[in-house]
Length: 427
Ligand SMILES: Cc1ncc(COP(=O)(O)O)c(C=O)c1O
Image (tube, rainbow, N blue to C red; front, top):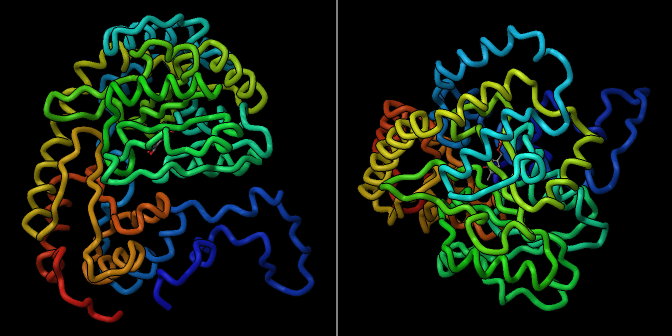
């Protein structure tokens, strides 16, 4: 059966059996989770594992350009800072719920250097175990069952999944090439606005690489105030930018600190994805409610990791520049390579993704990525994984060294993969 005909659940990794499955008839009938959790499909990257495994078993080596996991190790100076910090017994106990004062101070100073924003480190900054948990927790903190959460139609899966877990309903605001992947807030129906509690935005955008403009952010703040929405901005890719472009923080705009909370991450910025460190900044009341929710669920970030993160932020300018230069070289190489293969590629000014149309000979993105993977071993992410507005697109990530990118491009040439390719071989 072609992969694209399988539901995400059927492609489940065998090491995580479905709770409804039983090995023999005498086995204890598993107790079901709540209906909200049960209604969620498998997380997209987990669901792609089934297809990857099947291609691996066919003997074709995979060249994975799918995930957004930085390929470079964390900088040795940050490792050194961790090494010192972990030897300090003061760092071995439970962390403070508010995070270390030294880290909050470093965040305030960095936000000031980078975005010229003044924030109170005691009331407007909260360290997080990565930005993902913070985004999920702010959604859980604010949504009542029945509330609406305004989510872009191409979205990081946590936005929609946390909304469902909270008993809310996502309303998808269309992101299209025509609107430059910026939602038209005026097009949201009045009855939806009435029920909405949160507005989620993500720029630099995953998966499209799109940018927010100053006008858009000003409009979003006014819209959030008018409809009494918590405005959530996700800046996980805020520091990965090219050609001297500097992504905007919503906090730079008047009124943002009344309604908005912005999430930042060390994962991409400092190649610290596995360390689990991020932070939220913004409205005092939103930060307080996020903090209250988190005190129920977690104990914060290991103190030594907070110290290493403090070092990273205090040396951010020196550490970030070479990283952006590296991604820019990869971006330029892949933009040229896909252009040679007939694609009309927009070079993103920030983020580390290329977002491209699938060849017209394919109906939708899962069909295309399966074909590509089985023919060449090259793994890319189907646009449909980010929402139905992504069905005609796919995402290629820049988090692989040049030699791997070159191998991928060579494989595409060898198998005659082009944007304007003729009917594909039936698998
Ligand atoms: C748009 C977006 N937001 C948030 C995250 C989560 O990042 P973190 O590692 O800080 O939890 C990711 C991770 O890929 C992402 O793509």
